[in-house]
Image 1 (cartoon, helix red, strand yellow):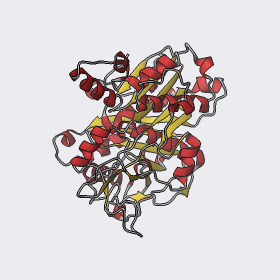
Image 2: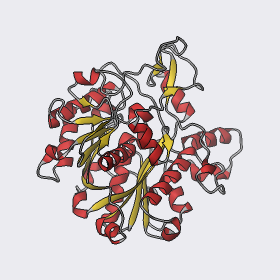
Image 3: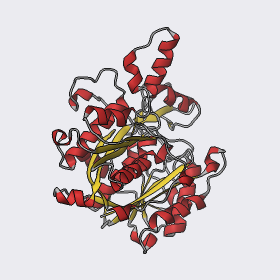
Image 4: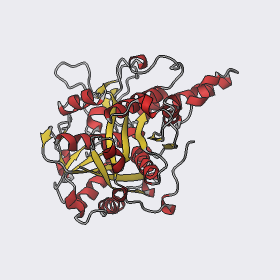
Length: 425
């Protein structure tokens, strides 16, 4: 069954560290590549998938940008049967889930019928199918195969059904915080004994009609000049930039395999990270079109770090879901400055390489944090700008190696829903 996010004020705070919940596998389907190894290799090389969208109409501001998965063929990664009419978001999620399970050392045959929970975050999955149903209904024709795939709950449900998992299925749809909310729901399922293994993550697909509408409203960054020799392919101010008012939409999926520590140790799994803090909140000013409140974000970070007595000093890096839309980015920058001090902690933003995945962004950020701790390195940014210095952030410009024992993941994007997660070795 699919669930909606319950009222934050009615929830009891849960300490992930008390439950000993660990991450043992990662699966990534991204514009940089399908599979964690190729994605991480290109990310650490400083590559970017952001490019001019040739299918979009040019605007007065230039040619719109996007970050899409090129030459995608689901049959290269999934059994060919039953793929007809399935949304790309569902296919992305299924591939990422399979990769994460394999990375964790599980076989699908061994898990069939097992107590595996699936929790996914997304805000737009199935939207293309819903629009197709609407158009076909107006024409007096409906294809029954469209209905099971037409909701945001499609990715999680498809993973559970196609792999014959026997536990809870949960979907969260709360903007950029969706992926971290999905991780929280997986943690609760494991803590309460509803499942032995959980697949948690986020997924998003680029939808042409929604993308074109965002372009028309000026919410998508455009290339200023794509024809003049010597000019860069695109000029995007990037995240934490006071002059940026638009983002670059992206697509893909990120899945994490989560278990109780004793369960992972019993089967000899490699533990990649442990959940050591989580919290969420809401900023109503974003919904009212007002300037967002840094204090709400500051308090949320402090609550996330409160599960350890040394607080901010227990974090070595921040992986942020900053989007390039300056009001929310600058509020986050101010909150980070208040907590960690000016230029006090390295900050990484995956949006510069894979675009803004919206509902899948924070799951990608969590995966980036796990990989950074595993390898002791942080990816850099392909956008050369000194604007982050103006908001007093130690924004990582180039890939760097440093010991990372703990990471803070923030999802403070647009929409009002906020979440933060701390991961530790």
